[in-house]
Length: 431
Image 1 (cartoon, one colour):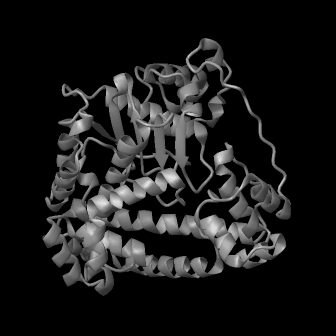
Image 2 (cartoon, helix red, strand yellow):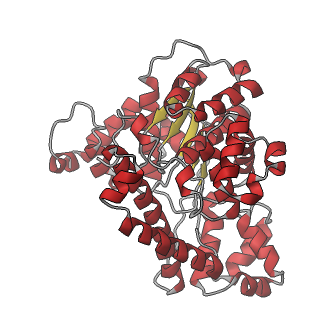
Image 3 (cartoon, rainbow, N blue to C red):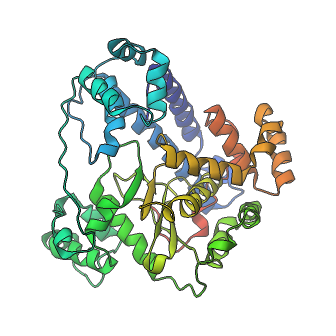
C-alpha cells in the first residue's frame, strides 16, 4: 500500500521503468535473456508483468482515494481497522502531518502508527483518529461458545455469491462435476457446500481461528475456499514420517537454506520438509486474496506450509518459505491460532515481525549481514561473494538488498525471476 506522496512518486517511477523494460523485453530479447529457453523466457515475462500489475494496482488505489471516488471503506473484521484508517486519511486529503495536527501529535507519531499497523495505539487513540477522520464504524459481534458444535457452525451465514465460483470451476475444484460454467452457477449452493464438506472442516473454523496479514480488503469467502483447497491437497499427499518438531534445529534450518544454492532448490525443499513431517503445497492465490503463503495445522496436528508463488522469483520463494516455517515453529504451536495467512507486502504486526525476523536471519545471519560489504556496495560482485561465503543462492542476497533499499529495479538479474514455477509443472499457473 502507498501511504504518502513520496511513496507514490517512487512507485510511479518504478512502474514507468518496469513498463519500459517490458516494452523492450519481447521476442528475441526475452529469448536471449533466457538462454534460448522459450519456457523460461515466458516465465521471465510473466514475472515482470506480475510485478507491473502489482505496482499499477497500488497506484490506482492511491489515486482513487486521492480523487475522492472512494466514499465507503469496508472491513471484514476489526483486524482490518488500521488499513481503513490509512485509506480514510488519504481519501480525506490529509497528509500524515495534518492528521497529527488534528489530534495533537507529531507527524513522526502518525508515521510510526501507520508503519506499525497501529499495533502500539490504544483503543482510545484509535477512536480519536477515527472520529477526526469522520469515520462511521459499525461492527457486529457474535459470542462463540463451542467451536465444534453444530449450533455454532450454523451460526455462520455463508453468502454463496461471494465465493469465486467461476475461478473454482475453472480450476476443477468441484469433484465429479462435468457440467459447463452456466450449469455450475445454477448449482452453486450445492457445489460449494459439497466442496466445503469435502475439505473436512466446518466453515466456522475458517472464520474464527485465523491470523491474517493483509493490506487490502480481502474476500473472506475466497480466502476460505483457498484454505480448504490447500488443506485438501495436503491431506492427499502421502507422508509416512511423523512430524519431528525436535528436528527443526538451527543447523537443520541452515541446511534447508543451503538448498537454495542448487538450481532445483525449491523442488528439493519439498522433500527436505517432508522428511521431518511437514507438507509443502503449492496453489496459486484466488482473486481478492493477495496471498503469498500460509501455515496451518491439519488433522492430527500435521503442519502444512502452503505457497502461491504469486511472484515467480527465487528470493521471494525462499523468504516466504522461511516466513511460514517461522509461524509453525513460533506461533501455531503456542497460540490459539490454527492458520496464518500472509500477504508479505502488508505492514506486519508483532507476530508477523517475529516471522519476518526469523526468515531474514535464517536466510542471512544477522551478524554476517551487518558486517557484509554487500549491504553497502549493492554490486553484483558483492552479491556473489556473500552468496558463495554462505553457500546460498545470490538471489537471497540480492533480495535482501532490494528490500532494505526499497528499490526493486536494482540487481534484477540476480533474483532468479522465472526460475520457480517451472519446477512445479503439476501446478496450473494462469491457466
